[in-house]
Image (tube, rainbow, N blue to C red; front, side, top):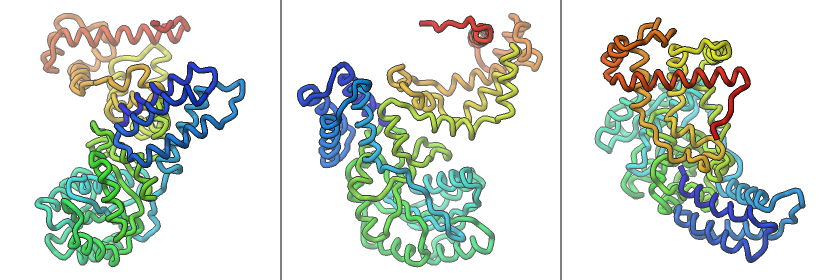
Length: 435
C-alpha cells in the first residue's frame, strides 16, 4: 500500500539530504514534487495545500543545530506532519457493552459483509472474546448466505431470521447474545449503490433501537475523494465512530486515507490489508507514516511473528542451528510458520529501507513455496534428517511424489546446502556480506 506515493516522497526528500542548509530556493522544487506526489495519490487538494504549507513553514522556521543534518530534520518534519494528517494517535475500539454492539454500514461493493467477518476474527484473536454475527442485509441477493459461509469458515455463529424486519432481527439477536453469553455482536446491515432516504431510515431505526458502542462505515479505497461525501452523508444520520478502509493492499492510490480525518474529523480505525479473512488490522498513523517514508514497520512485523510463530518450536530450531544440526525437517517447520505470517512480499515491505533495497517490487509466486513444501513432504523422515543420502534414485522418487522435477529437487538441496554453509560461517564468525 502507498508504494508509489512512498517512492515519490522518498525521492523528493532525498534531494534535501545533499544540501548544507534548507533555504527558500532549494526547498521549492522539493515541495513541488511532494505536492504532485500527493495529488497523484488522490489526496484532497485542500489537504495537500495545507500539508505542504505546514511542512515548508516548519522547515524554514527551524533552527538547525550543527549536529543535525538538514535532510534528517526535513524527514522528521514530513513524518510528523504525515502522522498528524493521518489522525495523530491511533484509536481504540469500544467493547464495553454486555454484549458490545458493533454496527457495520456502507454502500454496496465496499466489502462490508467480508469486513464484518474479518472484524469478528480479528477481535476474537486480539481480545479472546466470543463474537456473534448478525445478518441484517435482507435485500442483496445471497448476502445472508455469504455471511453464513464466512461464519462457517471462521467457526463463528451467524444469527439470521431470513427476510424478517432488520430492526427486529437486530433486537432479537442482542437478546439471543445475552442469553448465550456472547461478548459482542456485529451487525451486517444493508447497503445501496448510493445513499438514499430508504437506506438511511432503516439504518437510523436500527441505530436507535440497539444503541451501538461502535458504528463503522466501510469505505473502498478505490472510491477516491467521493468517499468524503459518503462519510459525511452517513455521519449526519448515524454519528459514525470510525471508518474501515478496505482494499488498501490493492493497486490503488489510497489518498483517501490521508484525507479522511482532516476533512471529516472521523478516525480511521481499521484497514483491510489482504483479501484473506485475517486481512484486517488496526490503523496506526505513526506506523503508516513510517511505512510511507520507507522507515518500515518493525512493530507490525514483530506482531505478525508473535501470532504465527511457536516460541518453543523457534527456540528448539535456533538451538539446532547453533549446534549445526539444522535439517530439512526443521526447515519445513520454519517454512510453515513463516507462511502463517502472510505473503512474503508483504512482510518484506515492512522492513526499514525496503524501497531502497528493491524489496517493494519483489514478487514471490506462492506456488514456489508450495513446491518446496511438497518436495520436503515427499521425502522420508530419514531423508529430511540426513539430506546427504539423497542420490539419483531417491531424487526421482521425490520428484514424482511431489509432482515436480528432479531439477527442482536438486535446486532445493543445493540452496539448503548453501544455507547450512552460511550458518556454519556465522557460527564461526567468518561470515562476510556478499557486497
